[in-house]
Length: 522
Ligand code: TNX
Image (cartoon, rainbow, N blue to C red; front, side, top):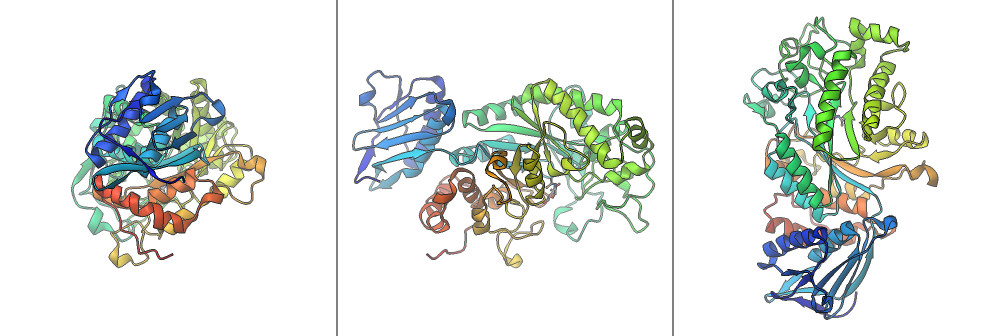
């Protein structure tokens, strides 16, 4: 920190050269407009000395996201790659103070790079749908926090959310569930099983627009297409792709809804899109038709989403159901597989071959370790850190999303009577902040496989925009520091006393609904 301030006036210029940097300057102006009521002219100037804010692009492949910023009495100079400049502008915006109508930023020097290259939020739009406007709002907020990945959970048992031209029933049938046919799952029927039809989907055009909107904010959208489980919505429309044609009771190890006779509930049997939560009965069969379907779908998905990674799910597959499936048992024999775990591995490996052939990489939830990990897979570790540790030790890349620290669907307050209904669990701000994505068990070499960290927002209990924002904020601020800030610079006191209050005000200025954290006393 230096002494004194720089005043940003209405006529002050921003000097930016490339289209990319000018776009970032425009996004900065949007923020400034909302906060201070004016925009700064963006100029392509040679006379850069005259501009109040100078955005100077430098190419440094070793430092793809970092930036430096110098603010003296006359000028702000931000240097970095296009991404770095975007992040520098976010920091600049956060430094703005308005005093007596004057917009000022403090004089200082910053050299800043992120601790982790993968900084994500997963949003489940299957359990409850979010409009494109709401997705854009979340993307805006993510960009301000220098988060760079939106993992878009587009499919699950309760709904399919993306237009696929080759399979129109996915949007005609799979994207709507009928909540009047309810199952019995734990004890929370009355609130969420509201008897209304829930649904919605994004057209390919809308999804592409989201991808572009995110890219402008330096965010990659990684789509998730769940397989071979969490696929009831698909199988409701295309039952021939499932493992079963006869529903005879239910295997063990699944928490799918069963009635008193131990039989699957009607809506599984009738193959409607289920209106209740949990792990569901039917799953893909490992058949040629299923692979053709999945490859067709992934082909369209790849046209919409240019991301290096595609997420294919792989979690919570009631694999023991394959024990009673003739289709599955035949493949086990034919491929010489030991059991159902190896069958799932085989399944995922086929999909990986297809993705790799198309120059994409596969991410899956940590269950994909069971029965043998596909050779190039990246593992998302959600059942704690165990899976992530195991995968990193095997030389695979890992993203940490442990349900102990990164499940934003859990309650933020210890007292459940003063919190909105949540799936369970308790995860307060301090606990999120305390997380460090590299487990102590890993050597330096192994820890290079930890690409970063992500918070997951499952939406079984989150039917509205307000509730979505409430579960994200303020915890997303803590996530941002977990992901960006080097360990030695993290400090919960300065986070909560110095930075948090300003961020909360900014949420208010932007009509974001959030949880007011408990008073924090130094
Ligand atoms: C487990 S986390 C799931 C989701 C649920 C979530 C609720 C994961 C890979 N699978 O299907 O929504 O728990 O917390």
